[in-house]
Length: 363
Ligand SMILES: Nc1ncnc2c1ncn2[C@@H]1O[C@H](COP(=O)(O)OP(=O)(O)OP(=O)(O)O)[C@@H](O)[C@H]1O
Ligand SMILES: [Mg+2]
Image 1: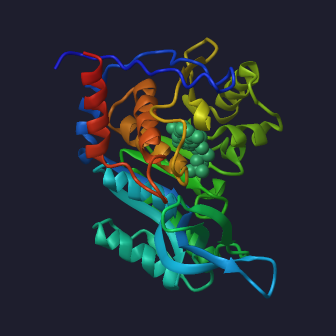
Image 2 (image 1 turned 180 degrees about the vertical axis):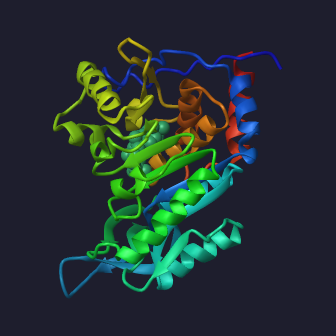
């Protein structure tokens, strides 16, 4: 197959000016296919906050007589790995060997997660069960009629109030240090629940380490993070600013993050507005490249898309991709996963199919 270059269409005209940006650079699709082919030979250690994503769906039958609320007639409850567990699940479906390190409760939610991973033959020796804290669970209530698209009406989060017990933290830290050494890359997925705290991450040494942190990106400045993948609101929160359509502000805050965290690269995910990749270059201002979204700007379900993005990005880097190639692969995967319902993964076969289709389309 001859080398094909990705040309990604700018998004629809209806969007804001910031959104109507074409992709700044092209990338060799044959090379991307070669990178994906080596995914099964890579080992990724995931240190992070494991979450159970639950979806309770049903039909709205009537309005309650007890209070002015809708009654959801229960049809189904489904559960999927969420948060760091979603990153693990994505890596496994991409063919990588995964070494997860995290904690779940000694409860039904914890059992569901462990059984799910065991079913996929994922090494669960780094997932600790504790009686001191319940498994973090995010439950979405989805309402619909038989022939309509369901809609989320409520989300209930049960998050632990307690800190992680010291002895659990120590076991986690020890296991994380050991697994990090045996991996081609470490993926840190911090949802603020303690398993991937800056204190734990600072003690890790790895060939490369990527970070997704919901609330405290800048607290990882003394950790050896090589690249981070915040979404735009997380970047805005870190520096108390609003980017909106102001590309100048995006550029400034991206440059600042690179410097403050001492990163080689920063991949900012911007929802329907695509991604912005900042890459350090010696002695110069970091280079910024924009990548427009792949596929539709009318997603079916964006739950957990950020976890898919960091999973593909990290695995691609571990497989020898450049930051630009890894970002393009993550962008394709993001475009695929938002077209799936619930917390979902992108498989290696799906990613390859999309790359082949794109290559054929350009012939
Ligand atoms: N509205 C959208 N239209 C098209 N693609 C989208 C949309 N929202 C998200 N995506 C895809 O998913 C990727 C990640 O989404 P986003 O920027 O929302 O990350 P995130 O907020 O960190 O996600 P998460 O909630 O999982 O943490 C985007 O870069 C893009 O590829
Ligand atoms: Mg995210």
